[in-house]
View: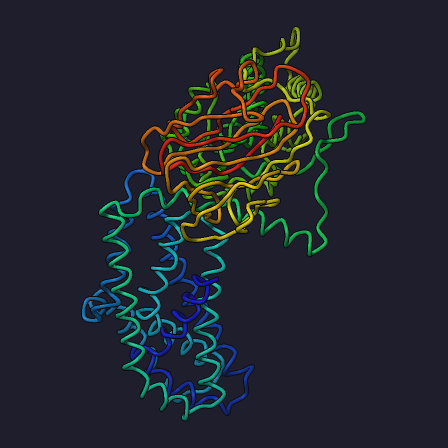
Length: 571
């Protein structure tokens, strides 16, 4: 909300800048003319020009976001340039002089003329004169959003910015000369605020360049924007899609293949487009590497790829990250190797492919036929036999005469072993303030700053608590002292926890189940004594009950500060 307010006031400041003054008197002079023939065309011209500036700046933001994966230095340089333009108008002037000159010529040529065309051209002139003011602040908005990778947030920021600018202009048009005179008097304050914003941004650039922002991006995620979209869809009465295609005869046509737009990188393959996949049966698999449901589905996708690749079948794994640490290419490359994935994987860090498919789930499987049409989907785990039958049906349609036997059951690691959901009574639980439930420490959910927490004497089923000193952030909880502890009472065979280290160095931990060593109930990432180590940001299997699942009290205690805990999952 604070960022949106800053973007809004940034828009307000834009129209307080001196470069808008040459056009405003003419805008006021036309206020008494018919709106449809004069005011509306002028505003349309302004909007079109502003949209062009916004688009060009968004391209710079896209470049900055792409630069983030190769080195944040390039993106920081872009932000530094925008900050200097705010601090030093003389620096911005030569960069924007062509726009200003064109706007002034258009304004001089058409000033005093009536008619729709003249009003439209004057709107373009206003937009061109506005552009030098919009550039630095709008560039900061979009480049900052590109660094964090939240594209829906970017849209909201741009909307807030435009709303701020529109507010000032609307007041000017309504009140006329009085506002114009007040704007002149307020220019000094407006420019002071612009320079202050430039100083703050330069300070932030310096802090990031010096590494003072250690792992800041790990607290950011596009997942919350996905949740917002889902809530908005429900409010608008949009029905959730069926979890799997209902098959009663031939596979239905569910839509056209939208392609793979906006991938920020590729693993195991050069970039692929729809044209590269023409004539093939394609499985598009949306996944993210710390998602336990995806981990359990990948072996089946891998088996289908190995079995049918020679029959014209292609798998494209689309890795759309939930947590920001999953955006890092090095983390994903390690996960791809660990999962023995040989098929192409598209990095969907900007959620472009996700949105092109209007997807809502991890994992999600979409089957594309040889003619480029979506013919089948399945969301979540399970229905593997049904999905394979759909693959075989589409391959037969494409002309594969002899498909032979179906795949054998894949070999599963301990983490990939399928869950019996009839025996799982504990839900996925997030440990950040944004989405968590059932937090039971008596101090309550103290957020945003280090605080001391205590474990309650008893913990009800599916409740969790913290002990020791922690910082509860929107997407995770971070240990701030030695012996910081997390407790959870659960009922499931497996307990998994997504963990990371804020400084990148290993952090040892000790697990206890009902106060005792786990013994035979230890997960793959702990030993019988309950000892383990956080080395990279991923999902850790900490408990695998040897007997029938029953309610158990789980604790994990970290040897030193810096452990980041994101979410519990169960199986």
